[in-house]
Amino acid sequence: MVEQGYYVIRFDNRDIGLSTWSNTKDWETKPYSLDDLATDSVELLTALEIDKAHVIGASMGGSIAQRIAISYPKRVLSLTSIVSFADASALTKSSILSLSFFAKVPSLEEYLGFWSVLVGTTYPLDIPLYTQLYKDSVEESTRYNPNCITHQLSAIARSPIPDLALIDIPTLILYGTADPLIPATHAIEYAKLIADSQLIEMDGVGHDIPAGICEARNRARWRYRIHPEIFKLLKRSKSNMSNEIEAVKAQFIKYSEVFNKLDPKLILPFFALGSILITTGVVATMTTEQEVEGVFTQFMGLLKKQNFTCSKLDVDNLSAKMLSDNIAIVSGSAIRYKKEPGTDTKEVELERIGVTYTFRKDPPAPTAKATEPPATEATANPWKIVAGIIHQPENAIAL
Image 1 (cartoon, rainbow, N blue to C red):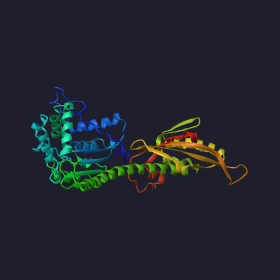
Image 2: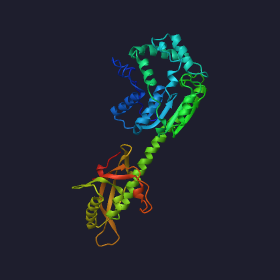
Image 3: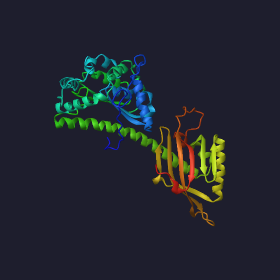
Image 4: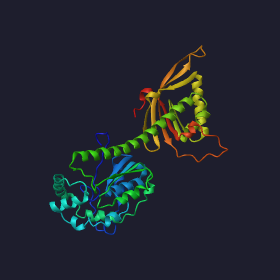
């Protein structure tokens, strides 16, 4: 993923590794839930100053990822849930998750026996790989809260089934047909509740996508089947963001074309109320349509006195960036032209300017009544100007 240009964040949930351990005396009366772990994840994004992310989780992590998508939809670009569950009974009723197994550091034989069951029925356990994983886990066990498993199984057990129908982002669900821990029916059923989801069946795979598949042809089979689907999902979310940027640019270009008509009434639909315009020596706040019209009547009047004819935006070099779901910024340059004195048609350059505008995407307006005028291009586009700065062209922002 890093090679594909993505910034990957992996972290320990509370009670594991270097994350905070929950050893307070009142833990039993105030245990945490998967929703708390979801909040932990989002707070990490906030601390890293990351607005939105693609969320990928496996097993319990997949259930946490579901809750992030439900409770914090504006922070999630896409969801990938791997060998996971929505109904906690899948785990709490499992005979495989014996607390006695986790009560001590298992022997190598116990560890290999446990994972040979979890990996499923089709692919043999990669003994050298899992032997090394065992050695790593023994070394890491000193950094784990000894009460970790009890705490996290309790978090799973006490977490209500999430309302998966609330998830409305691109979702990829992968499950193994031979998963002894979470029956395949769980993924199949909860996939039906998520409108924009894709379900991928991994035949013969258990509760772990086997990194140590022995035959190279099988390893390639999974790498080329699963990885492209995940990247396709990530790119699809990127595409949605690109579509928004293009919509903002289109609105800005249309505004520039309409502005050239020097009619203040025509530019009203492009502005949100409460917008601000900053130009040389002028800062104008426009809270009503009358104020927008008044400001531009004065501004356009000055241009008319200069024999202004049009402003040509450098469309090919516009720079735009999404700052959040509903805020975007566009920056570029333009050339203003005027009629050459003593001629009726010849145009000469008046001045070069830089333009930087902030747009806000407003929610869709209620369906128009039959008596209302039809929507124009400006009113149909939900992106409205909230701030405009006219400056020196060299000060255009590279976004």
